[in-house]
Length: 300
Image 1 (cartoon, helix red, strand yellow):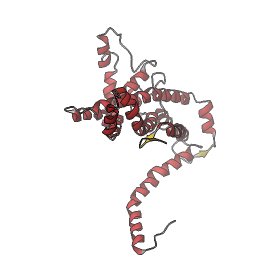
Image 2: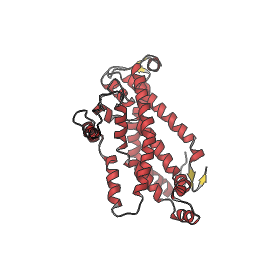
Image 3: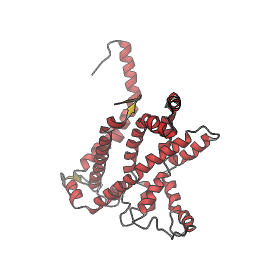
Image 4: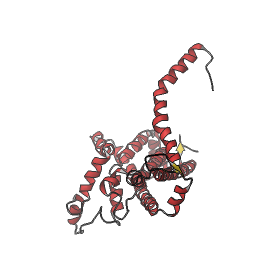
């Protein structure tokens, strides 16, 4: 460990440690401590009281070979991620391009598009539960004008995932804001030079905007991937994992196993499998970044 040599440097170092001590204690007590405790519980049979009983890899073996609910949660979560993430990245970029125009009142429009991203999960779930209602929902009322029969958005296992993907896209404003910051950091001189050389709008988009925006795209891809795997509130409030386990996401599986079945050890096992899955996919995406992410106009 490096120790400053002068008295003043040691004093400054001590003051720095004192300033970060509250955060360090909070991290050890409320983050790292529970993480390690959960890892230990994943190898035990623990019902929330008494002493955990060590059973080794039995929870992992049961989950991978005998638990049908694990397969349901894996299938529903992967389906949601595969449906939402590409659409969220694409629509977020499209809205950001629109919000990057210099027109009157653009700040108001930016605020309107960003507002859903900061609303609470419970309020959003209740709102969309009304929108998707089969008999009295706003969406079915609009579709009925075009002769579309009533759709059971939240009660039909074949269409409920489309409802959740559509609902998630409503909050794409957070992705849009990050894209917008990246767009505004691109030097306008590049567009001016390309225009002088005869490049059209589409050519400028593919040759300037997309390459220089790849670091932002990479950031949104990683954060969106991590966030999509942790979907919980909407499914808990609107469908409770149904119908027929079509929305039985990983978060619901962990919650129900721990607080309804009182199997905290097995719930910790499912939680760590989710962690491993997210980490593996994130590392895979990061390993490919050198092939398509550009920094300062140079490919790394």
